[in-house]
Length: 216
Image (cartoon, helix red, strand yellow):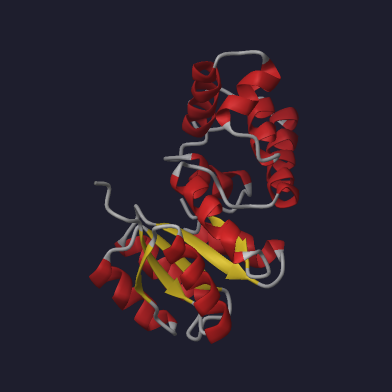
């Protein structure tokens, strides 16, 4: 039997926390801890070792402090910021600190499980608008220089950029394959190649590089 996905839920607002807790619990997730400040979130993450961490952007002590500390101690965990508004500056800062994206707190709690499963599958939890900003940044760079995207490596191909753009529309691998009339394995190869050229570990990590603000 597959063990449940363990989740750290750092949300100081009780009604919001309870709603998310029950929505995830009903879908088989295990809420292993509910810290109410950044220091407790970092300590609980080290002790409980959750696979997913949901961190409110207004967490006392600083959401970015919590994200950075957890990312350093649990680099394999998926960190998502809970936000009231879509502020690119704050969200990109969270991504640079190690987050895989964000979840709007006004989202129907019953939709949280599907989004989290998507992140666990390697997707980045960002809106199409924000991700398109990142893709356009990359396109501009590729058109404006002859140097490789990564030192000593090849530039991004048009098909790889096309696949990345379709990902921003929320399409999954099978849907991208159907749209481009290619095999799913071909789509996965393009995604893997693009991620490799950006010098990151997975699709979620690629967002930080696309923003041009990676810590690496």
